[in-house]
Every structure is written in C-alpha cells, then in structure tokens.
Image (tube, rainbow, N blue to C red):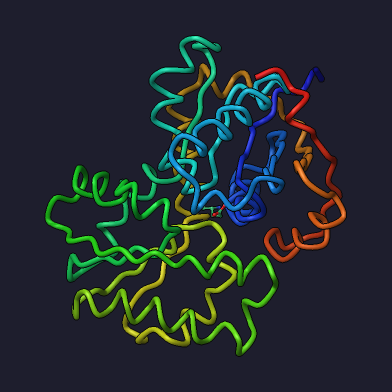
Length: 279
Ligand code: DGL
C-alpha cells in the first residue's frame, strides 16, 4: 500500500474518464486513481447480482490502495450496486470509508433544467431496468415526468470508435426517436451513461435544437466539491499531490489507445489482476 490517500474513480471501462476529467478540473489538488474494469465490461447488460459482485470487488481494491472515498463514475454500477454497498458492506469493511455514485447528484438538480417538466433519460439497459432515475427524480422533483430509453448499441459504437461515423447515425436516430415518441414535450435529455458524451455531437445532430442535452461530468464534479466542503472529516483524509494513476483490468495498450478519446489527454495505465486480490 502506498502512502497516498487518493480519491478513487471507478467505471466498468473507459466512460468514467469523462467524469474524472471534470472532477480533476474542478478539484485539481487531490491525488486520484482510476480503475476501469475493462476485462469484464460492459456492465450494462449484466444482472444486478453480477454488477454488484464486480463493483464490490473493485471498491475493495480501491480501499486496499488507501482511498478514503470512491466515486462510482458508472451509472450501471451506481444503479445496481451502490445502495447495497453503502447499506450492507461499508459497515463491515470500514465504516470510515465512503462510496458515492453519479445518479443521486444528477437527480438532485436535473428538474431545474426543464421548463416543461418532461425529461428524457438515455442509458444502458441495466440503468433503465433498475428504474433508479425515475425513483430518485420523483424524490426531488415530484412534478417531473421521466421517460427512459435504453440504448444498447451506443456503448459498442463508442468502444469501437464509431461514434463520429455515418455508421452510427442509424442507432443514434433510432433511440432518440424512440425516446421523443414517448412525449412530445420533452425539453431536456440526460446522457445517463458515461460513454455517451462521446456521441454528443451526433445526438445533437438528430435532436431538435430546442431540447437541452445534459452530460453528467460537470454536475458530478460540482456535487463532489460540495460534498467535500460539507464533510471535512473525509476531505481531511485526502492526500494533495495532484497525481493521477490509471489502472485497467485488461490490456494497458488498449486502454491507453482508447482512453485519450474519453479523457482528452494521453494516459499511461497499469494493469491490475483482480482475480488475485482478496475478495
Ligand atoms: N459506464 C457505464 C455507465 O455509465 C456504461 C458502460 C457499460 O455498459 O459497462 O452506465
């Protein structure tokens, strides 16, 4: 274990890098480590039990690296694993540690972006079937109607670097139309998957200009800054060396080649083999 006590940022693969980029920009002083569970991605189509098991294993890995705080920068993991980890596992592993997700901070503010109070959610099948966005938005904005559309082809398009090609047009149009067909007055669409910001320009192209398209990075980074201000007992534990370390459970060559698209800067990652970690 190193002497660093960094903020841990987790995703099933590359997508969380779009969130980490914004967090580092907002909170540059801290040390960060990122883990992409690329060897077992995508999480989107997997069962609750599997996503929970994989995510918990990764969270324990972050704790072993000294992280006092882990952000699940993955909607699917936030939807399917976060609550159980917070309510059942943390008390047993280490009650002083914290794990946060991306759904709660988004649903706390999203209603403020919509005038028509009709909001569309584009996400993985797993996030949509969990109904997490519908349930959480109802708590903060009961007047808002939420419409969801699963976009199972979008993560593969992004991961295969087809996000800005004509080949992507069919599936981008298809899911946007399926969402907008559910309500003629949707005025705000949330990209509720960390991969989707790479498709932003395509999504914009096929969405009426008066509809807002929101990505989560800025919302999550603002929320984390606010959380650290309110929780000085956690903030005090974080080391401040402005270092960034990146880990993947799969090939580092692949990770480094793809990651720059998500992070906006070149990355040199290290491999971690979770199978040899104690679970
Ligand atoms: N990063 C995941 C999310 O935000 C999507 C990728 C996956 O399916 O693993 O939901």
